[in-house]
Image (cartoon, rainbow, N blue to C red):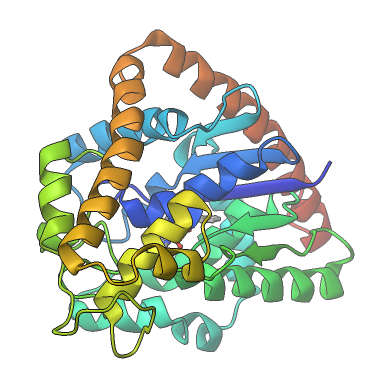
Length: 326
Ligand code: TYM
C-alpha cells in the first residue's frame, strides 16, 4: 500500500484554506493509502510563539483533524515533537543541503524580509520538513501549492543522499488539489488566506463562530461588475468564491457559472455562506465532543509509537551509512 503524509503548522487557527488544501485531500485518500498526518509543532517555533497558546493549539489541531473526517482507524495521527528522531534525521539532511538552495525558497525569502532578526530555523525549516517526509518512506505529500517547492526540495535532498550513500529514501511526490487551488484572503483576494494573518476579516477559521463566518463571506471583496464568471486576474474575489464552491462541492467552474447566470453577487455570496456554514458547522459539532476526550490521548500515544519506530529505524540506517556510529 502506498503511503501519504502531511503536516500542518500550529501558528494560528486552522483555516478554510488548510482544510481545502490539505485536510480534505487526506480524507479523500485515507481508504486507498496508508495515511500519516501530524501537527508540525517544531515548525511553529521558527517564529515567536506563546507557549501556553501553542500547547492549546496543538491539541485543538489534532481534534480538528478528526472532526474534519480524518479517521483515527485509518490514519497514524501524531505530534511532530513526539517523534524524537526527526530532528536528528533533519540534522544529517541539513549537512547534505546547500545553503544556496535553502535560501532560494520563496517562503524563506518572504518571511525573512518581514523581520530583520529572523531565526536560523526559518532557513532550515524545509530540511526539517524533508525529514518529516523522508523518515516514513512517503510516496505522496498532499499539500497546497504554496508548499510544493518545499516538497520538491525534499525530493532533491533524497535523490542526492541516495546517490551518495545508497538507496535509503523513497523519493516523494507532491500532490496538489485538482485545480491547484490556493484559497485567497476574502478581503485581499490577491494574497493567500493565511492563518497567521493579522486581518482576520479576510480569513475563515474553522474555529470561527458560524455567524461570523457568514458575515465574512457576505462582506468579501468582489468587483464592480455584475457577472459571476471565473477570471482570476480581473475578478480575483469572485474567482476565489467560485474556487471555494468547487472545492467543497466537487462541481466544476462551469457548473457554478451556469447556476448563477443572471443572478447578483448577493445571491451568490448567500449560497457560498450557506455552504461554508454547513460544512464548518458539522465539523465544529464533532470537534466540541472530541477536544477534551481521553480518546484523543490514546490516539496520540498510538500514533507516536508507530511513527517513532519508523523514524528510529531510518535514523539508524542513516547513521550507519554516513558513519556516525560507534
Ligand atoms: P501550513 O501549516 O502553512 O499549511 C498547512 C497546509 O495547508 C495548505 N494551505 C493552503 N491550501 C490552499 N489555500 C490556502 N490558502 C492555504 N493555506 C495553507 C498548505 O499548502 C499546507 O498543505 N511546512 C508546512 C507543514 C509541514 C509539512 C511537513 C507538510 C511540516 N512538515 C511535511 C507536509 C509534509 C506548513 O507550514 O504548512
